[in-house]
Length: 220
Image (cartoon, rainbow, N blue to C red; front, top):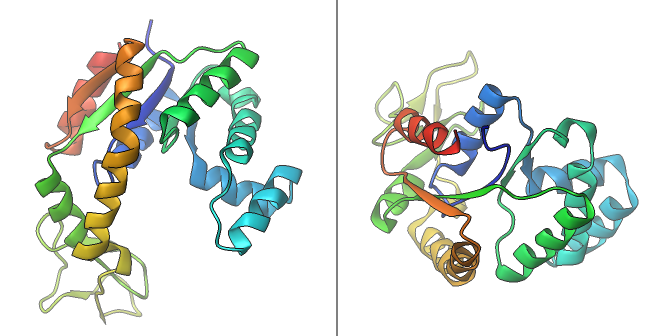
């Protein structure tokens, strides 16, 4: 039987979102992203959404207890009854322990945790090479998906060409900080799931199609 409840782990730029989207389309499973959940709860004005918004308005981190509550609400919905893909959560062993308790309450079980492993040098190249069109928001990459015009302009829409820009969070300084935070918070999480014998990994330093083929083979 194919794995239906899983977590995707990986550093920024590893391709978690891409693989989650492919799994969602192929298996019909909902992709559960903490960012999407927060935005939806705030938009809907739910009690937890309003509580989360009060922290976000102050520029503070949303507490784990609020995030866990939002995830519990999401996983209890009918479309998640047959399985789900957690993308971006948990990020720490404390969050993983809270998730274990949540799943017990829901009478569900985590079946697999997949680490998409990419060398740091490759992650830096992927993230710092991204360029975005400020008008149509399409994303290019100076090496892997270069823009159709030189110098770097987007020509895909009637309102373009527009000179592409590098987002502030894609600069080398910011990317390095994001990767440091990832190592500090997520490496203990990797050990946590290794001890539970639920962790497996795939080599993410390949094309998305090749990575997905191996991922599907691992999941059954």
